[in-house]
Structure formats: structure tokens, C-alpha cells
Length: 227
Image 1: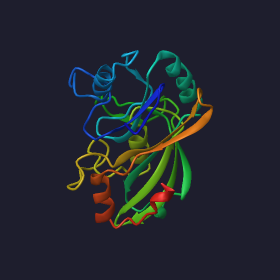
Image 2: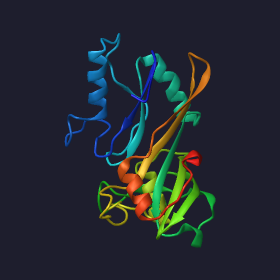
Image 3: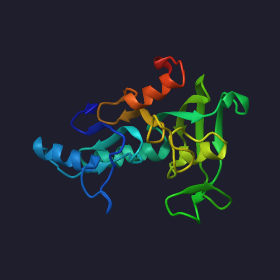
Image 4: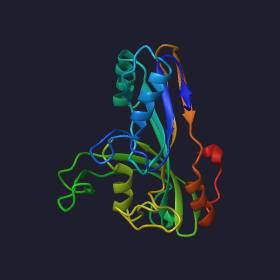
């Protein structure tokens, strides 16, 4: 656990672990682990309340609540964007060549007609808005900090594909990488207003080893305090 009190749980999800059970992975998900933790701790409620989730191959922070009232309160923050998730990603190419240092990607996303798992930027899709900051530049790669202003499936991955800078290691929207067998995407920070303690809570997750390995290999020098 990265953060825990009587109302909230924030956990650091490793890559290659699903957030929720599904037919292809019914067990060994973060929801399963949290359920077992609540059982082991003899929690008053052992119902799993998922607030935020991540793609299976994305690492970083996920939030759960320990009871339904807390879930309803923080879900309102999720809808109003008072609950903020900050991601870091490694995009392919040098974004200084064709993109502003700080900008919003405002492009509609819909399901691809070719493959049910893939999403595309296309007319008729749902409005999707991603804010990014370029944080460091290296060998044919750019480290970016991001915030989602909408929550579409694969939003960051699709948006960066659409601007010509797919995430390194993303074999669904770009190309596989020998050093990183997943997309270079990590949920770095989660910030929310604690309605019971009446204060802002900020939780950070360290960059995982595989992500750091790509940063080093691509000579992406960065200030971790700014991420």
C-alpha cells in the first residue's frame, strides 16, 4: 500500500497485472489482491470499491475506497477533475521538432472498425483531451508529463499515436521495444481532496525499474522533482 487510512487505499500496480478480473484473467488482479487484503485485515467492509484503474501493461497508482460513502464522494471528484492523476510517458521521436513544449491534444476517439481492442482518432468519436509537458529529450525519445482531462480507453496511447509520437514499447499503436515489453506509461501521482480530514492528499509512485532502464538507454536526463 502506498497510502491507507480508514476510508481510502492507494496501491502501486506493477505492469502486467490487470486492474479488474475478466474472462482472460479471472484472478491475480489488483482487485483480487485488495479483496484478500481486506479479508486478512478483518475489515468492517470487504467489498472492493475501485475508483481508478489502469491498463494491464501500465504501471502506477490505483485508488480504492473502503466503503461506499467514501466511494461516492471521491467519484464526484473524479468526474469534476478535482481528483487528478498525473502520468509520465516516453514518446518516440524528438517532440521539439514538431510539437509545442506544453499543449493540449484535443482529438475525438472511437473504437477501431478493424480490431475491437484498438481505438483511433476519428470523426464521430468522443471528445478526448490530454494535457502534456515535455520534460526531457534524448536519443529519438521524449519524456513527457501528462494529465487526462477526459478518461477514454487508451487515451494517452491513441493521442500520441495520432501526433506521430507513439509511446515506446507500445506494440498496439507503435512498435515493440527490445528493452521494454510494454508501453512506457506510468501513473506517477494521484491527488485528491480528503473529505473526512478536509485536506489535500498527494501520493507519488517511484518510476519502475523497466521505465528507468529506457530513460538511461535513451539518455533522457530529467529532474525527478519536476515529474
